[in-house]
Length: 172
Image 1: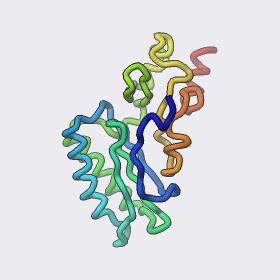
Image 2: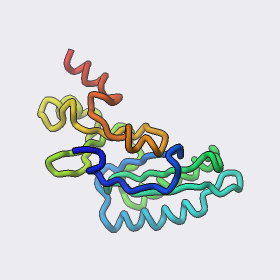
Image 3: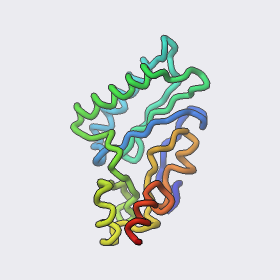
Image 4: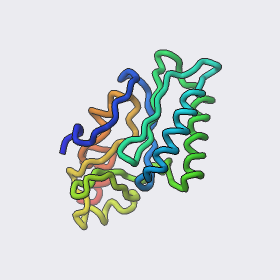
C-alpha cells in the first residue's frame, strides 16, 4: 500500500500552510462527518485573528481525522484564534461523545481491513508481541505542522516515527 492508496482529499491552500491534526478515538459515522463539515464550515468562515479573517480550511480525512489548515503567509493565527479552534474541537468532542485530543492514541493503517485503527500507547508492547502491528506497520504522525508534509511525512513505518524509541526499549 502506498500513500496514494489512502485517497486523502486535496486541500486548496498552499503546501506551506500550517496544520493541526485531530485524531478521533474511533471512526466517524457518516452523520457525524456531516455535522463536522457543516460546523467546520461555519467555524472557518468566522475564524479571524485580531479582526483579520484567516485563510483556512477544515477537512475530515479517512473517517478518523479532522485537519485544520491556515495559510499564515496571508495572516497568522494568533494565540486567541488558536484557542478559539481548540474550543471548537472541544465542543465537537462533547457533542459527538468522541475523543479528538488524546495524544497517547496511536493511529495506524490496518492493512487487512483497509482502515485506520488506533490503540493506546500503553498497548504498544502487547500489539507488537501479538503481531497485530509490526515495525513496518504504517503509522500516522500527527505532529507534522505543514500541509505539504501530509503527502511526505504523515504516514510512515512505525520504526521511523517517534515510537522507535519505545520499540528499541522493548527489544533490548
